[in-house]
Image (cartoon, rainbow, N blue to C red; front, top):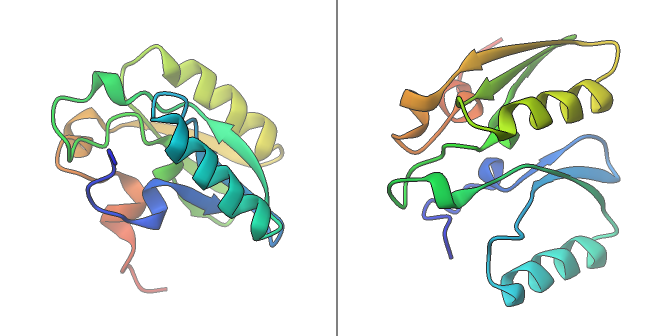
Length: 127
């Protein structure tokens, strides 16, 4: 309901063939939460939640807090941060998930107001 774009990279990211990162949807209607979790279960996927607080967003396209929209390159994770209370928690989760890789944060508050973050703005960069 709150995701106006419907882009998968704002909702879920594969870690491997069996595990995905998802937003913490606890602020969404219970029907959505149950449906989303059931879809993951039916697909045989385990999941790890990352912080996601829509209450701070000023418009329905604002992607502030979309840590799941990180950029991954070789052994480097570029994690968006937004100057919110959830930044530190997100960094800790990513350090656990991607142990052995470098986690670099980059302020993305202004970019996120336009409806996307790092993965969105870099998806068509060619190798």
